[in-house]
Image (cartoon, rainbow, N blue to C red):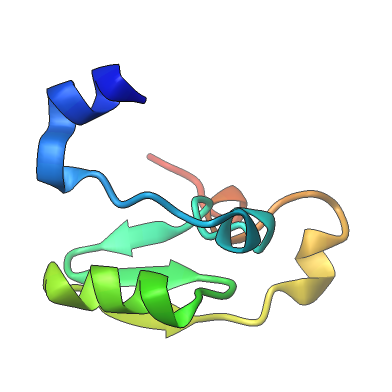
Length: 76
């Protein structure tokens, strides 16, 4: 973790275990919008402080297969 802190400093947003289990890191970022399944109040606050808008999408059925928002995209 120290290497990440040294390389990226204040740009890192650390997520809690609960956020990780809710696939918060499997988010989609489009301009200043972050689309994800769920986020804690702390994560929402950290994202908003950096100018992001948070959109929570109900992908609970897709979670059963082991994926979330990012897994529903296709990069072209």
